[in-house]
Amino acid sequence: MSLRILRSRFSSVASSSSKRFLSTNAAPAAPQPPPPSSATSPNRWNFLKYAVIGAFTGTTLLTGYASYAYSADEIDEKTKLFRQSAKNTPADGDTALDSWYGIFGTSVLWYNMLIGLNISRLTFLDFMLAEISRTVPAKAIELYLDTRRLIEEQVRSYTEPYTDKLLPDLLPQEQHVFTLVLDLNETLIHYIWTRDTGWQTFKRPGVDAFLEHLAQFYEIVVYTDEQNMFVDPVIERLDPKHCIRYRLSRPATKYQDGKHYRDLTKLNRNPAKVMYLSGHALESCLQPENCVPIKPWLQTDKDDTALVDFIPFLEFVARSSPADIRPVLQSYQGSDIPSEFIRRSKEHMRKSQGQKRFWK
Image 1 (cartoon, one colour):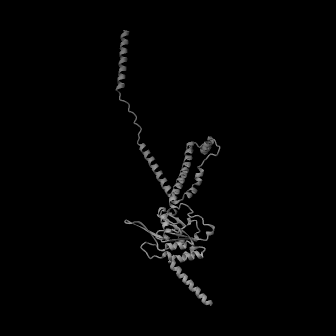
Image 2 (image 1 turned 90 degrees about the vertical axis):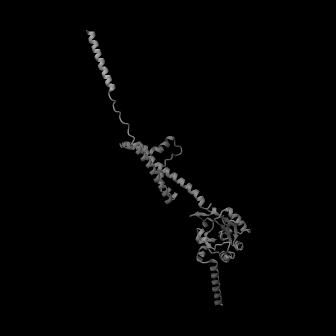
Image 3 (image 1 turned 60 degrees about the vertical axis):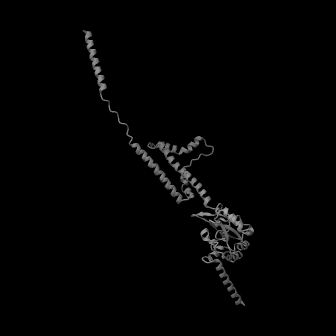
């Protein structure tokens, strides 16, 4: 009896457990939570991308404007206080700990002070970020100034004369001597190129007499925008008697607005005693008050006498030795100097003769 009862209870328990087992397996799986949405990830990347592009564009525009509006010295002066505040250089003999504290000590002190004031919303990381935001722009300005000065030095080597003293010092006994600066092409010579003959160089009529006579009174300098490889052989053939004391070519000119200009202030001579004679004087010289225009010459003009016509005026200037030649040249502005000089000379002789007759 008891054995039958135990079997029946065992069978009922087993059946119920199997039912529960089956029901558990048959039950639908619980829904899994959806994966985190990545819809915000592209937005964050877009924001970062546009922020970087905007920062780069703004920096480029600001750098371009600063380069256009201000010189490197002006930018250096305007940002000096800001860059000095960001400099923390350790002194000689400081330990590594002193060097580290010199860099981050300001932030540590401010952090400790704010902790003492119970300002908990500002953390040490905030101060580190503030320190970085202060030092990084200063370093960027330093890098910009160094780069700009390097570029300007390179550009200056191509646009400025190669030295501030193109000529050596005058001897003490020659301080009174005037300097006659002559252009080369269309002033002393003219050169052309044709397919049949190639390059041909023609000497202006009267150039030999002009150079030989005025070399007695002037320090003669040829100042041209031609290259050395052209100037040297031409001068050697043009001036066999060495009346021309110095020759200056393109590296001695100032390149500005697409042209090579003669800068007479670089000659190491007194500007009051310098004259620049050229067929394109006013167009090729930075000091128009020292310019002596002469008619440009082409090889087709076989009867040209412009150089010889200038000899009386130039000899008179050298003999009379005015204190400053610039007012003299200003008085001849707009007129043909040789013709005007002859007219003034005749007028002066007429007045002198009239005074003599009056006193007689």
